[in-house]
Length: 352
Image (cartoon, rainbow, N blue to C red):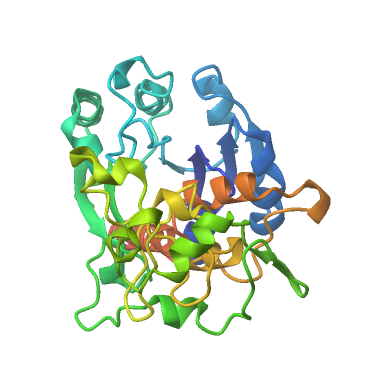
């Protein structure tokens, strides 16, 4: 009996890489963003299909498995629609990404994979679209479990909480628990040994170790910022008008510095920007570099995100990194699936 995985919404391959690290055979990833193809293929050696799953047929997806007996379908539908960090969405249901989870469900119904995994933001649980997703899985005779995973408790260097769902035709399935005495990895553990760079500078030996240029005013702000502090540490003339309003008082982390000896805040698609979260370097007067964001997302240092520096932009690579499932979380999901398969006598040595 052999096993194959297809990764929907694969992006540059954080989940795929983690699943492969766990020993699973990922045969293809599907994503509608062509700029992800180089990184996905170069690092994972799996097929990349540039397609919109709302238009790509279940028959086409099913054909990618080839002649295997155990099919696994995984994916992380774009989460910005459901995230609490996306304040602008007052009418979320009208976002074109809203229905992607429904299309995921339809492909599950048509393909009938043995195992399914879905990862997203915890807020998704509040919405009917998720409840319908779970209901459909149960109607299709899947055993379903889901929980909110605190990545830092699994040794990931980031305070990132994610909703992870697992479903199986074989029987009960659940994510493996964290080790009892796992060491929490900190910002210092992960990026503390990188060479110092200035705002707007790129390290000559590592083109991914590149930071965005700060304005003169933001340089003044970060120079008055302390680790774990807020904009309340600044001189009054540096405080933004929005923070002086009652509605802005709660946004204390923006423009903030990370702490060396704590996990980082959640890495988003705009971690390169000082004003979008607590993305200031603990000591250097700049926001995180692309390399630092990638390492905090647990991508290995050898992971390649671009073919040449001429085509690389900070905005694009930051989006690729921030959108990804952290590699180590992908590995935890993969180990959970592998443990489940082995409990039903689908042995690791039988996998391709």
